Image (tube, rainbow, N blue to C red; front, top):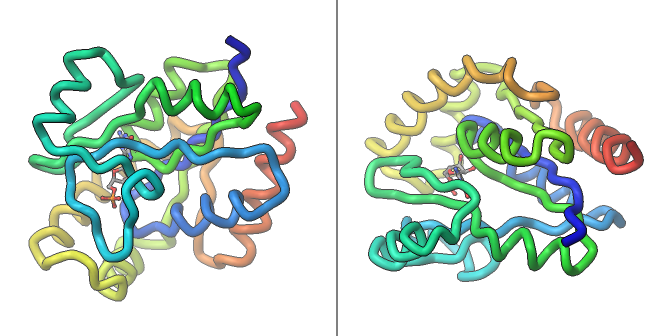
Length: 189
Ligand code: 5GP
């Protein structure tokens, strides 16, 4: 199979990476989004097959047994997330390069699988206080879940140096321009 390129966006939850990924998908570039599988329930208006492939825990475990994932993880207690091999093949067959919105460990796993073809971008929030603000403003999680995400973020910030690029997201318009520039450069390399 003709493997295309992979562009990984990883960041602590609430850092704005999803906004940047969506911005890239709106450009006239041959990019496709890797829809992950998860066992967490849909949030807000998330649609099955668009934001995620929503699976039950049993279905998710079944796919692990079948060796269907390139990488998977129990990102939060009881909540599995993973990248299906079939998802990459679908996008590559359509002639697209693959964009990932995935956690730090998963991002580094993808990079380890495809070291030459991957651009791994770490989106860094300006500060932990700002991250906390963003999570609270989003208002989609309970207090306990927000705390869980903040604890994870504190650890995750220490992994930034393992990525190809660290993008500090303190000014969204500037960060949007910068990702488009970085990705175009990578696709032409
Ligand atoms: P959320 O519940 O906010 O959608 O996602 C929680 C975390 O799981 C985020 O950091 C998200 O990037 C990550 N995530 C989403 N899909 C995957 C995946 O396929 N694999 C891994 N390892 N993490 C993922």
